[in-house]
Amino acid sequence: MPTRDRITRSSRRAVVMLIVVVGSAGAFSALSGVLRPGALYVVAAISATTVPVAWYWKRTWRRWDSLAPFFVFYADVGIATVLFSFRSPWDALPGTVLLILVALFGVVFADERLLRAHIAFTVLVILVLAGLSIGAADPMLLLARTVCILGATATPFLVQLHIAYLRDQVSTSRRDALTGLLNRRGLDSAILQIQQARTADLTMGVALIHADIEDVDTRLGRATTKEAITELTAALREHAPGALIARLRDDEFVCVFLGGGARVAEDLDSLRDEVESLRLRSASTPLTCTTARAHLSDSATRMVVMGRLIASASLARYSDTLEGDERRPEYDHLVDLLAAGGPTIVFQPVVRVDDQRVVGYEALSRFPAGHGSPQTWFADAAAAGMQIPLELAAVQRAVLASHHLEPDAFLAINVSATTITASDLTRLLLPLATQRRVVVEITEHDLVRDYHQLTLALDDLRAAGLSISVDDVGAGHSGLRQLVEIKPDVIKLDASIVRGLDHDRLRRAAAKALTDFARDIGAECIYEGIETDAELHAARTLGATMVQGFLLGRPTAVPTAVTPDVGRTA
Image (tube, rainbow, N blue to C red; front, side):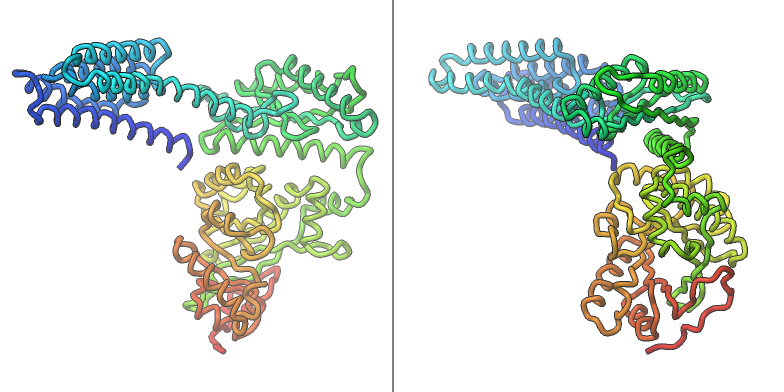
């Protein structure tokens, strides 16, 4: 459950509990026989009103910031009436603690003036009851009780100070220390808090500004670098007054605009012109500004759209570099491959253990010889800033090549967490998902740096009917945290665990633990890398849902629909 919803539910329960406590205290007082003659019915009636008030709170909690004065007035009158209904003011004095509980409610929902007025009323009630108790108890005991209760009235102000401290800490953690701009966490929070009416023309735009700070630091030193960053920050605030401005990294800034499509496009163009013509006084610093914008629809959250736009603007900067004078020849093979449409796609069958039938295929990328394995190609692409274009090209090729697969077979497509958060996979895969089950496999070699952003993107994919799988569990970055955060529909055990499963008790124990975990969370479990009959039999014994490997079928461009012979056992 999101943090905001959890806090909201907790606060609602706390206030309902407060109302129940006040009502119960009044009811117990009415039944105790300590009330003045005739006060029983008054106190009983006041206690009974807490039931509809609690019900009304649950129904109208969203408006209680404005209703807080009425609730505080109701509580003060009700509690004071009960307290002054006691025969003995000495017995009633401890009950003033209920007024302090109401003050804690006021800290959250009331303004400062109302809170101070309530505390003043509470102190007055305490002093009046203490004065009426003179002669009814030992003077020192009366003084001690009165001082303790009066001291407790400071609690709401102490809570306010603590809340202010926490807010300051949160604000500090969401700001860049040098510039005072938002950092990525602060930007995400600010986007969520913006109250923007949903209109047909609501557009988000981002401008990604990159400064060659490393070069300045090398040539002129740290002090000059700080001056350059400070000067650039001031310029961005001046030229993008209506934008959310954040410092994502040492050398990278972003400005986020929300509004009508035409206005956002105009703001982006204007800011790009200003940045590219900007000459910093403190140091000669090359500046680049790339932009991207998208219409905000109901199908994706602002956080997801912003992540995709930032990635798109970043890719545009890399593309400009690769196509310009700074293009590095060691990446020519990547550029040529993308120009040709991307890698070749082959399909490896996935077999269901129960009935030994092919139920799906995994799409795998194959590359021209001479530049290493597929992992090497993707690593080179990441270094060159072309990881996302290369993966999307592979996805498009897989979608196009899948038309000859059996219509009831699912298709598993490998995508990194970076590409999932930065691209609109839903648009690419939704047409295919209407024809067959599509499983998005999160590759293991890409470290997930922002699980919150990834979770939002995965929610969009699930809403479109796609399944989510964690690939190669047990290798790379596919650890337990990734399983817990992603909550996959499918878990794929890496071949490094599966191979030798039949005779290695450590691998067998690891496979059993992961299989049991998958079953407990309702996920399917695929064992990949099955190469022998003995491994197949061990996978079946341990409870694998599906299996995959050279024993069952090698990757081919046009897989056969014939079911592999997996009926043999060890």
